[in-house]
Amino acid sequence: MTETDGTGETDGTTAAAPPEPPRPWWHWRRLTRGRLRPAVAAAVAGALIGGAGVAWQAQAGPFEDKSACWGMLSGDDVADLFAGKRDIGASDVPITSDSIFSEGPSGVCRLKSPRGRRVTAQVHQLDTRFGGSGDKWADEYLSARMAPLGGGLLGMASDTRAWLAVPEGCIGRQSDGDGPMVIDMEAGWTNYDDEVDAGERARLTGAVVRLVNGYMAEQGCEGEVKDPADKLPAPTRSKGEGPDAFCGVKGLRLEGTREADKFNPPVVTAGAGPVRTCDRDVLFGHPRLRLMTVEDPRLAALYAGLRYKGGPKIKAVGGARGTGFLREDFGLFQAECQTGDVTFLIRADGTERAADIRTLLPRYVAKEADRIGCGPLRIKLPA
Image (tube, one colour):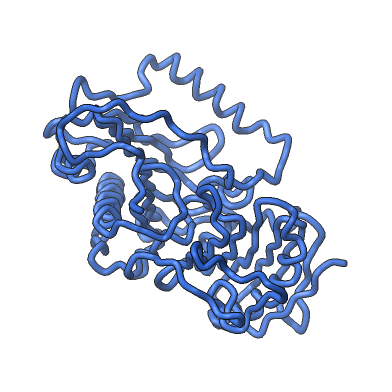
């Protein structure tokens, strides 16, 4: 089914928005504790907002033909996101840099229909402090439903999420250990089923590309990103799997009767890079098991710190280089490959899959390393 936020944009009638459901509980547990920095940042931001008097640059009344989202989306652009409707409210937090914590530029834009639908765009540098960009971002924006944008772009899109990294040729190469600077868009509740609306996906892709091009123009960068919407791979679909192809990885198997539910088969990323994700055993709107290969070194940076402190250590053997950890609910190994760091991980939403993770991870690392040209790669799990 098509992902929506529960409100239609197909007519002009106004209907009461249904109560918002609880947030999905697939969001990964944060693996670090005692971090005061977010709270301090919030306090400082509150003080700055109070001192400046204005944080939101709000439109007065419905959005018509004026520019929205930092002046980067036209009236037609906004209407395209809302099925042609033009009575859309717009507000944004200006894009500014954090001079206190030396973080990258950040800003937020919100678009809202009187019929209840909302679209949120955000400019930010991906946060590596909590493993996987604070858990929630990687959970949603690297899901199996997301299709790679291709063409050398670091970005992905579905019918409710889209993101694109600002090209390094414009803003410079990220420092070691830093996440890339991205602009992302959210247009509905998180969903992990296999039905993706190709039209909605194309509209979100086009919008996030326009935002990146607008940001680049403001920075004085030459050139622009071409909209890849018409070249995206076919929308992700669930796929059956044989006994020797767990999550579609040929040669990967799990002993016993862990066959995929024929009514709810695994969802695997369509297209090549920057990640390959398999979301499996989706229940109540979230995957209970995820296998993911993060092939792009810029995204692998999200897990660079976590590999040393997530749990008992995994070691590479046979001359391979890399490190990782194994827990009952999470196994991760980050390898040093010819193209840069690559992260292999298996995560579960509880500890009942501990034996499966222990069985699958060494084989998964070996098979995926061979697929992407990083093999042979063998690992030794902690006792």
